[in-house]
Image (cartoon, protein in one colour):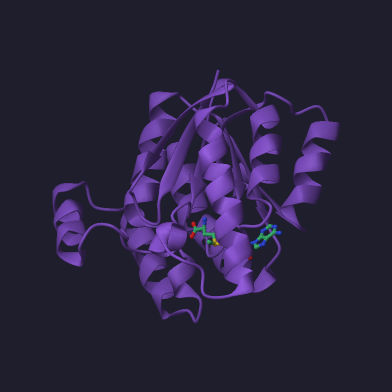
Length: 223
Ligand SMILES: C[S@@+](CC[C@H](N)C(=O)[O-])C[C@H]1O[C@@H](n2cnc3c(N)ncnc32)[C@H](O)[C@@H]1O
């Protein structure tokens, strides 16, 4: 989520965009269309997508698991980057958002590489494990509802291969992570995300690095 770096100024973010390779025109078009959307702010930051694509190429990823598709920015970019025999398992619950994503998958000619699972991601993740997909994925992105983040992480850790990568978006909660909560609901979400963020450093199953990219992106490599 979030189209702009939360800790960089807008000016610096624009400068970074100017020195990085431009997005594919179709992804730029999708970005413009999503920006008009009532919930357009939920789209993943371009710099985050570019990093994920870069990592996918680095580790020669074939199998990508995405939790949180929205209008399809990250999934379309990843599908374009994966080899012809690559495949994406995409999880979301919203038909309206994912209809836009599916439209762009078709425009990009990558729809054959993507299976969309329209149900709560925890159900899909459980099914994937039951179907024997442990260790199957090279790369996973967690970018959906925040309360189950720790559960999504545990499932992804089982589903990615050793050496595979899990990326988690919005770990800085739009800068609120270090601030005092203003409501009970916010207290719960801040507490949960702080606990989760802090737990990763001691987790011996992984190597972790959190970057101030977009709304905070945590990169985890499974040992
Ligand atoms: C931040 S957006 C994802 C952004 C997306 N990765 C992109 O490329 O722009 C979050 C998405 O998570 C979905 N979502 C929310 N709760 C979910 C759940 N329990 N299971 C699966 N998807 C969920 C929402 O419908 C929404 O499309």
